[in-house]
Length: 105
Image 1 (cartoon, rainbow, N blue to C red):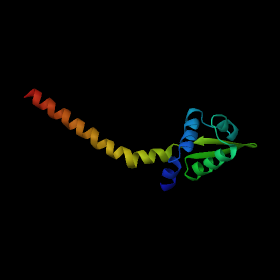
Image 2 (cartoon, one colour):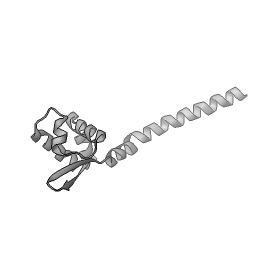
Image 3 (cartoon, rainbow, N blue to C red):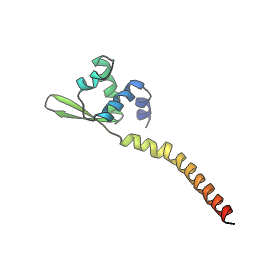
Image 4 (tube, one colour):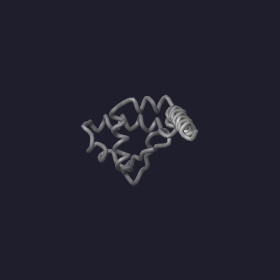
Protein backbone atom coordinates (compact mmCIF):
# COMPACT_ATOMS: atom_id res chain seq x y z
CA UNK A 1 0.00 0.00 0.00
CA UNK A 2 2.92 2.36 0.59
CA UNK A 3 3.83 2.19 -3.11
CA UNK A 4 0.28 3.13 -4.04
CA UNK A 5 0.22 6.16 -1.75
CA UNK A 6 3.67 7.21 -2.94
CA UNK A 7 2.56 6.94 -6.56
CA UNK A 8 -0.64 8.89 -5.93
CA UNK A 9 1.21 11.62 -4.03
CA UNK A 10 2.56 13.12 -7.25
CA UNK A 11 0.22 15.34 -9.28
CA UNK A 12 1.82 14.32 -12.60
CA UNK A 13 1.12 10.67 -11.90
CA UNK A 14 -2.46 11.48 -10.92
CA UNK A 15 -2.76 13.36 -14.19
CA UNK A 16 -1.56 10.27 -16.08
CA UNK A 17 -4.15 8.16 -14.29
CA UNK A 18 -6.82 10.71 -15.18
CA UNK A 19 -5.80 10.48 -18.83
CA UNK A 20 -6.07 6.70 -18.73
CA UNK A 21 -9.45 6.98 -17.03
CA UNK A 22 -10.69 9.21 -19.86
CA UNK A 23 -9.24 6.98 -22.56
CA UNK A 24 -7.92 3.65 -21.35
CA UNK A 25 -5.27 1.87 -23.38
CA UNK A 26 -2.83 4.53 -24.57
CA UNK A 27 0.70 4.43 -25.86
CA UNK A 28 3.49 6.54 -24.40
CA UNK A 29 3.19 8.96 -27.33
CA UNK A 30 -0.55 9.36 -26.79
CA UNK A 31 -0.04 10.05 -23.10
CA UNK A 32 2.72 12.58 -23.85
CA UNK A 33 0.36 14.49 -26.16
CA UNK A 34 -1.82 15.46 -23.18
CA UNK A 35 0.97 16.51 -20.83
CA UNK A 36 3.55 19.24 -20.70
CA UNK A 37 6.36 16.86 -19.77
CA UNK A 38 9.26 15.32 -21.59
CA UNK A 39 8.89 11.78 -22.84
CA UNK A 40 11.55 10.68 -20.32
CA UNK A 41 9.58 12.19 -17.42
CA UNK A 42 6.37 10.47 -18.51
CA UNK A 43 8.24 7.17 -18.81
CA UNK A 44 9.66 7.58 -15.31
CA UNK A 45 6.19 8.27 -13.87
CA UNK A 46 4.69 5.31 -15.73
CA UNK A 47 7.31 2.97 -14.22
CA UNK A 48 6.34 4.12 -10.71
CA UNK A 49 2.64 3.65 -11.50
CA UNK A 50 3.33 0.18 -12.87
CA UNK A 51 5.36 -0.79 -9.79
CA UNK A 52 2.42 0.33 -7.64
CA UNK A 53 0.13 -1.83 -9.80
CA UNK A 54 -1.95 1.23 -10.71
CA UNK A 55 -1.40 0.57 -14.40
CA UNK A 56 -0.82 -2.57 -16.40
CA UNK A 57 0.90 -2.74 -19.75
CA UNK A 58 0.35 -4.91 -22.76
CA UNK A 59 2.57 -5.17 -25.78
CA UNK A 60 0.83 -4.93 -29.15
CA UNK A 61 3.53 -5.47 -31.69
CA UNK A 62 6.10 -2.76 -31.04
CA UNK A 63 3.68 -0.62 -29.05
CA UNK A 64 3.40 -0.72 -25.28
CA UNK A 65 -0.21 0.01 -24.31
CA UNK A 66 -0.93 1.36 -20.81
CA UNK A 67 -4.17 0.53 -19.00
CA UNK A 68 -5.58 1.83 -15.75
CA UNK A 69 -5.86 -0.73 -12.96
CA UNK A 70 -8.43 0.66 -10.53
CA UNK A 71 -8.31 -2.33 -8.14
CA UNK A 72 -5.65 -0.83 -5.80
CA UNK A 73 -7.65 2.41 -5.58
CA UNK A 74 -10.69 0.32 -4.66
CA UNK A 75 -8.65 -1.30 -1.90
CA UNK A 76 -7.75 2.14 -0.57
CA UNK A 77 -11.41 3.07 -0.61
CA UNK A 78 -12.41 -0.09 1.25
CA UNK A 79 -9.68 0.21 3.86
CA UNK A 80 -9.39 3.95 4.42
CA UNK A 81 -12.49 5.71 3.14
CA UNK A 82 -15.36 3.26 3.14
CA UNK A 83 -15.11 2.36 6.80
CA UNK A 84 -15.29 6.01 7.87
CA UNK A 85 -18.12 6.76 5.49
CA UNK A 86 -20.07 3.75 6.76
CA UNK A 87 -20.19 5.19 10.31
CA UNK A 88 -21.49 8.50 9.02
CA UNK A 89 -24.21 6.80 7.01
CA UNK A 90 -25.22 4.68 10.01
CA UNK A 91 -25.39 7.80 12.20
CA UNK A 92 -27.63 9.54 9.67
CA UNK A 93 -29.86 6.47 9.46
CA UNK A 94 -30.15 6.33 13.25
CA UNK A 95 -30.97 10.03 13.41
CA UNK A 96 -33.65 9.63 10.74
CA UNK A 97 -35.20 6.68 12.62
CA UNK A 98 -35.18 8.63 15.89
CA UNK A 99 -36.84 11.66 14.29
CA UNK A 100 -39.49 9.46 12.69
CA UNK A 101 -40.20 7.80 16.07
CA UNK A 102 -40.55 11.19 17.77
CA UNK A 103 -42.85 12.43 15.02
CA UNK A 104 -45.06 9.33 15.34
CA UNK A 105 -45.38 9.66 19.12
